[in-house]
Length: 206
Image (cartoon, rainbow, N blue to C red; front, side, top):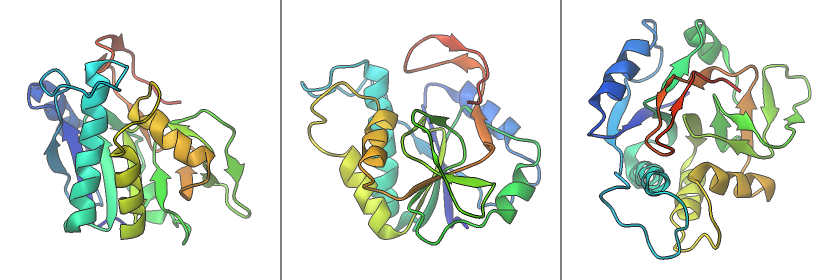
């Protein structure tokens, strides 16, 4: 299903990476995650057009970095994880059994639907996304999709205040990418302090 898995993690938060490894299922059936150092928004200045918090800039730049790497040959079927991701107890069995639609370009294993998803005929385990939020667990399939998402996130001016997941959501709403989501979710987010909002959040699955 995936030929590469990455986990994005800030170098100054080794506690989060350690916790990620502790939550990784013992029967993990996918390639071992490659650690990609997150861009630290407190250290890299955002451009003048960026209107939200530094942590969100670092997050956007981190996802762009991963998509650049994959599009350059890192892997054409890529699973992107953030280091606060959690996994359901039967993750290995469910991900192994999942039949990804042939036209899928982006697949969310966890997230939050900001618009009602569309049913997929004959499928109870997957829906078509129309505006999916959160970036703690999503897959990208094929070089054209990697390049499309890379260019979308890497555009020089988003014109308005955004986080990277909202930026993806714009593409979903315009049907610029074929996006699907598993149902129910395979992944959530762990309790802890967010490096974007600087607030402490409880464990969440939407």
